[in-house]
Length: 65
Image: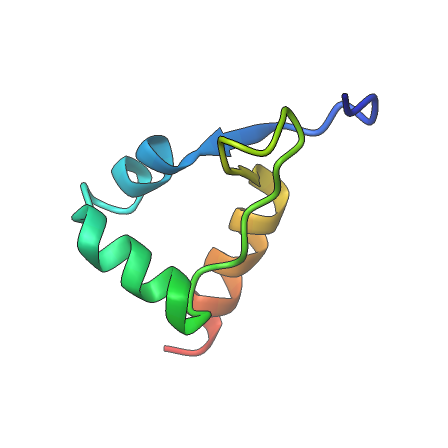
């Protein structure tokens, strides 16, 4: 288990954060590499994303517009 104090977010919360993005759109973008890859810090079954990675991804997306 992580001891760095990292904050993780799961896919459903991430999709909600991005305006209730449909599952199919989310996983297609993940497959294409548009969304950062998840981590599995709590076991192999459930993907999580570090909030700092998501925030960096969002800042980069805004700058590219």
